[in-house]
Image 1 (spheres, one colour):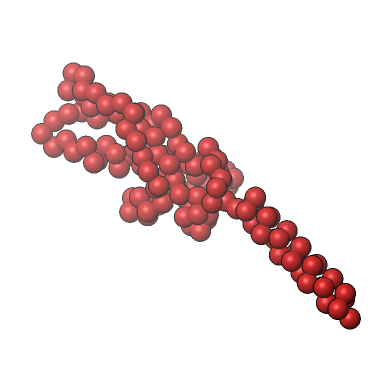
Image 2 (cartoon, rainbow, N blue to C red; image 1 turned 90 degrees about the vertical axis):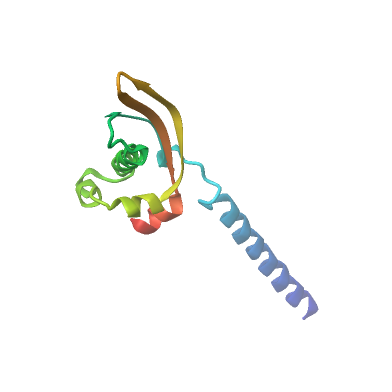
Amino acid sequence: MKNKVLSIKSTLYLIILILALLKIFFSTTFSHAKSFDIKNIEISKKFNMDFQKTDVLNEGFKIAYRQLIFNITKSKDQFKLKDLSLIDIKTMIDNFSIKEEKFIDNIYYVNLDVSFNKKKIFSFL
């Protein structure tokens, strides 16, 4: 009887260990898929009295979102997802970086990278 209980406990511990290892190895938390990083978004806007840098960045976020949807969805579903509000897009962004910005002949040029949060994208989809 004691050997049978010991065998059941060993089997139970082995199953728990296997499940824990599967969770660790197949978790999306540690995944660094490049499909959620949109790089080299180039935007230019004429520099005048009404110029706002945030407007240019917001345009970049919209472009990055459209590229992300193009990369991770089927073409028949892309048109359903393309028109999302800027506020919703911003909630899904993990971070962004401005790689280069310059003013040439009263035109503002910017090159940026945007990284989206995988969990928020998956929950949205």
